Image (cartoon, rainbow, N blue to C red; front, side, top):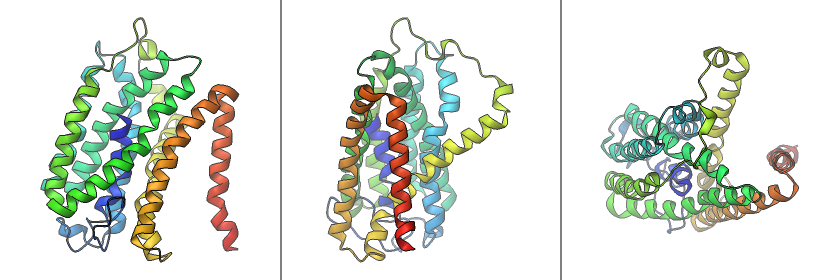
Length: 299
């Protein structure tokens, strides 16, 4: 599931840019929708609007937990949610092949994909941890390593499909293949015997209306959506601004995905040994320090 959901989120950049051309099979983020070859005339040159559609889809993947987790407490079989999510997510990709207007993109690869992927994604993320105790960090790190693996596999596959078959058939094949992979995975998700996610939790509208809840939800949405902006523009920035060759840019993408998978497992092991809060503090501090480096060096 992680391979598909996060992998599909990270390859959105394959579909976006002002000058699209197929690179070697490691190329992950070359743009299509905003190029002159685009199947959506209204998206040509609209980098911000097209990237926003991908950001909304990614943001909905995570923010959808507000509705998915309470829903899990109301259904007897969580597979109803995961199977429905798999269909909605993959049909969003399939129907995107018929897009001719910019709002079609928001309906399919933003709303349909985002809502479906959240329904497909969160049950396993809520259920998997209860199967583990002592090595829970390693187990979840191993599960989440599907993130980088998905980017490594789906990006070159999608790039090759667009190059040889065109955008419409690439989306149709991507949607149908992902559906074939998603249904078996969705059908085996089940709650641990004697355990109920949320313990019969009921949504409190009083809590939902509180400013703290609303701001935290908005922050989670923006964090998830904004987290993919660097990924969307990484290759374009490498070639257009830094002057790197296409092969070097694709190598950067491949290294990023590979390191991402390895680091998720290692951070999980570290969490088991030194504690989850300590590991999260180190990770967040290091990440923000890294983001500040370009600002400091520029001055």
